[in-house]
Length: 283
Image (cartoon, rainbow, N blue to C red; front, side, top):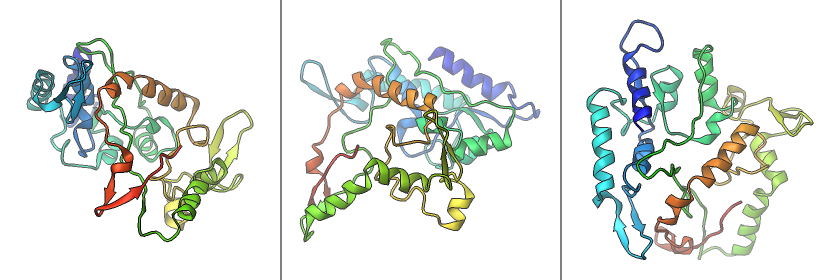
């Protein structure tokens, strides 16, 4: 983490874009929650300073914000913020993509899929900074020596449910299940082969019409519909480059220790408008 913070100060103070102005920050984020500070959360003490309840190895439970680990990472981040290293709007602004594209900061903790050159943020970044390079790095080592990525919960951040007022829940489930099959997922997500994407014949694909691109958004082709419900990360996501697929596997493997301490809510207990749901985990 000391090395990471040195890089943040360099981005802030050493005029990395060479414009002679003091207009860059070391760390940027999306403002949704505390995830932007994950490298410090997982790296201070035993990494127990998360904003949730945690299960200890002896079967007891603790509340992350009450731990010394939490005080430690907050102290480090507070100093960085006071030194002007962190974007002032990191916990309030959600326009991180534009800030990154404009070269406003040098480091962020973000989505693995951004490693794909076809994603909107990467296209914007390289269109304004063709000489630059965005580089994914391994999670930084902290006090406990076991770098951990942020584990996703069972409920994830988006899921669907079938309410108890549905007249034919089996049929409703079958429709969603069919939409998640490989053939239908690829068609919904990437369109028609030869028109919207091309099979290179070597296990890779070329995206001809990016889902974030203007041709899709302006012509309402419909690519990426229901993306929040079906975001497959396996072989069906043909947009992923080989290096991106490897990153997904690495992140999954490097989040198991943190996940083992996570207190989960049974997905079947989730409710919408106080109506019990039937839920199913998507592939």
